[in-house]
Image (cartoon, rainbow, N blue to C red; front, side):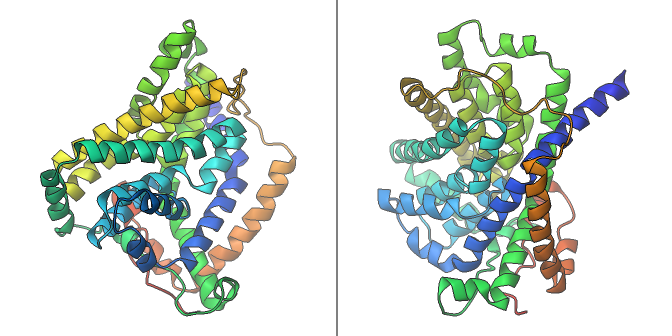
Length: 395
């Protein structure tokens, strides 16, 4: 029956959400701490050119920032407008969604630790490939047009999230700044606003993954991913993985549950990596590129990001295959449709309590008004996530 099928899909999605809940709280908590103590002005100052060292700094700063793809795109434009090099801004954008802690933890939980390692090796590879492509193909005229478009005002609050700087002001040691009343308030605001910005993508990814796991037969995936042809499947996987990502509309952390389904379905190891890396060229984000930089730059970014994700997928496949690290079994955690009393449940209870403390702090320090400003369309919600955020909030 149709109702039974829907209930089955929802049960799988719900169990997957429960499986990764504590990891999400940990990841967003650590990200909030980094964003609360690292000032935006410092980031801009460090990203003024496209040298390898600068790109490494961009990747490191991006890894500690928002994991929301929409927020990452908006923040990259903000950095670009304030003087950051375009290549460095894009490196920051890639790292913001593909090198964040929460993504690695959830990959390990749902798909396997090998994919976490692959993500943190493949991310820098993608940034290097992207930088090389920019150096070889990015023309001064296109870059000038992109900057002119980026400097124009946009209707709505497209980059409210990007303009948000909740870092703690004042001096003192890292510990003193973090444990101050202002520090706790800053962390709570970043934490809740990040959740508010990402929940649509996360819920969408879980629902899509649950539906596909419940309704699409394994035979379809085996045929689609050419699992009967070992060599062809490795060639085909990284090429088609990003295409599936673009069509799924799911970005950032939300695509990990779907990656687990695709892995069980037979996509190659490199195909999973390329699929996850393509979160920055889903259709809604391509449209945002058009608004931010113009349609020519949007098409250019789509093509170069696709190529970089494919190349990274191939190189990671070769490296891990050569090292014997590609898993021989496909047992990603997507089939469990029940919640049981185990270590996951205990961790969820503990970290839900900690999240509750941050939420209460958020609400007691002006958070209600900020949440009210996050209504509207998905892209507006993402980028207006920090629209009401100020540089800092006094307790």
